[in-house]
Length: 114
Image (cartoon, rainbow, N blue to C red; front, top):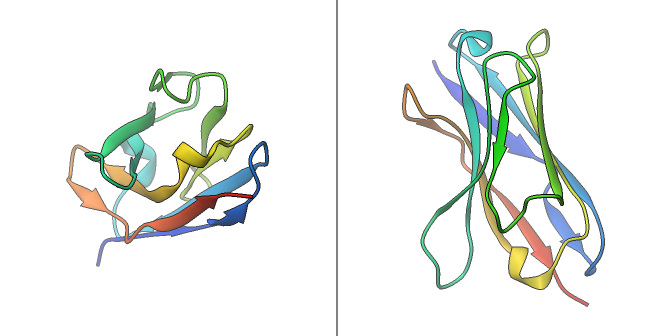
């Protein structure tokens, strides 16, 4: 059974940081490109970051470039998203995905407010 389980979301003040994690199981995690998406209120789902099957190939949305780092640990079947300098407009639900297989996690809520 394929599972993507995100964690690490929560409430943070503007300027704060969060590190999201996504534990994968049920497929060969190390073979696939992985992505983080987010759904923010009133907007369409947005691609945040992409990482190749091995670390080194990454890409970021302009809206978060310079404030997030995507990484992975293939030994732990885990995807990460380090988010810094968070803004209120970053509030939303963050999902990890395996786009080639259309696997999605349940999402983790991130709330940035004072």
